[in-house]
Image 1 (cartoon, one colour):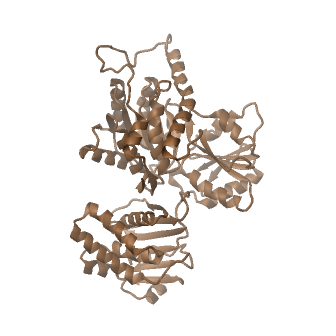
Image 2 (cartoon, chains in turn green, yellow):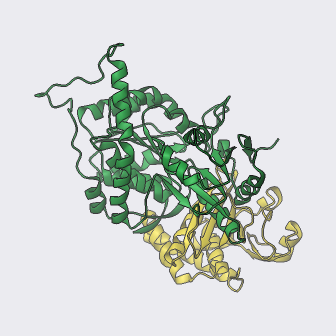
Image 3 (cartoon, chains in turn cyan, orange):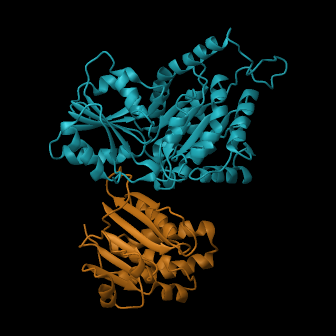
Amino acid sequence: MKKVMTGHKAVAEAMRQVEPDVVAVYPITPQSEIAEYYAQYVADGIVRTELVPVESEHSAMSACVGAAAAGARVITATASQGLALMVEILYIAASMRLPIVMALANRALSGPINIHCGHSDAYLARDSGAVQIFAESAQEAYDYMLMAQRIAEHGDVRLPVIVNLDGFTLTHSSQVVETLPDEEAKKFVGDYEPLYPLLDVDNPSVWGPFAMPDYYFELKRAQQAGMEAVPEVFLSVQDEYSRLSGRPYKGFFEAYKLDDAERAIVVMGSTAGTAKVAVDELRSKGEKVGLLKVWLWRPFPRAEVADALSGAKAVAIMDRALSFGNMGALYLDITSAFAGREGPAFVNYIYGLGGRDVPVEHIVQVFEDLRDAKAGELRYLGLRE
Amino acid sequence: MKEIRWHGRGGQGAKTVSQILAQINLREGKHVQAFPEYGPERSGAPVRAYNRISDEEILVHSGVYHPDIVVVIDETLLESENPTEGLKPDGVLIVNSSRSEDEIRRTTGFRGRIVALDATKIAQEAGTGYPNVPMLGAVVAVLGTDPKIAEEELKETLSHRLPPEVVEKNLRAFRAGYEAAKGVYVGG
């Protein structure tokens, strides 16, 4: 059914349909309403979830780890500083192979303190071992919250999955979202079969043991195997979900008018929608431009992204966070995928920090500037200098 | 696509009516967006909210810079906020004011179409006290939206939070706002 709802509400609706055993959450702008909606569902008896109102995000993720190890299905949500506080335990969640699903309302990290969108929070957790997916719209945030459950819990994966949605731009904006009927969503997500739950006292198991130089390395390699299993699982979950929802999710990224594009942009999150408008505008004037919108950021689909971009002459890779002292993280992901092969001229754009707006004209200008791109250049879009 | 910018003060319900308008437009089969501008918002401080309404899917996620309609719920913002900034020359300025359209034209310098309605008085007479609902009525008129669809949606939404007699008062306020603006159409 189609309804007008905010990104918050879309995420909360997906959570209501999943109805996890435990939600441990601490409110932070621009995530708070997700926690508030869910707390209301619990208070109203709509869901039977154990809501753990913790005193910090560090405790939220710790409670998630404990509950997940005990055998519970667990969801949390946070943003910015909240994720920063969680990160210590997020690494542990990933190493313990706990399928915790998290909605991350992307907000620029302090300082200076700011409440608006940036991807520096997601980038902070880049190497945590969590799978990371970016949504373009409230609709995609809803859809991926359901798919995330299946990806996280798949036997070959068993890793935390973060669904990123741009703070305010998606969380606080009312859009048209079509949700699945409850029974279809529940059937798609399925029952959760925990692996070696701590509460199975007849079959005791060890979680989070000490690992010295004799085993630490092997355990980390095993964790990497979980990440390596993600792409195949991601595609099959997408396929099943697409058939169920009628919305086409196919691939690690969306290639928008990219096939014959000479100039292309790569971007993650809500700016991809704005970029589509710019692409359409330029296409109507006969210009061969296109867009690659990344859905799956970690693990990064190196080979597939490289193949999709190899036909372009010039590509602008847009990062919504600085990686101080180097090019943006997404730029490095993509250019490294071209190691040893011929590729387009790549330019890196840092954009939208701290909620700086990205109007269509700015994207049009990026395409214009790509006509004489200097490969390896770092540029700033929308910055006053 | 039509873009709307609402100017109000914190507590006047600009954000609420922008969301209800989005629901109304969805009900008539349009694609919609509604979003407020977030700053250090607090009661009485200037706030802005936005709508996009389109026959096609709305992909853009940026702010609104060239609105087709500007709605000013609090008249004092005419001086302090420059609400006509970016308003399209063929757009419509809708102001909650007891002053005449000519007076508002002199204050704002806007040369396009102006609708002035005393939404505060309408709301008082209807017994609600909130000028946002008559202003919503005016916007629905200027957009050329079927008022029956709008009333159905408004009634349904308000019924979730308000007792029936208060819903009825709001519907009266909405109709009076609609009537005050009827005849001015933003076009296309």
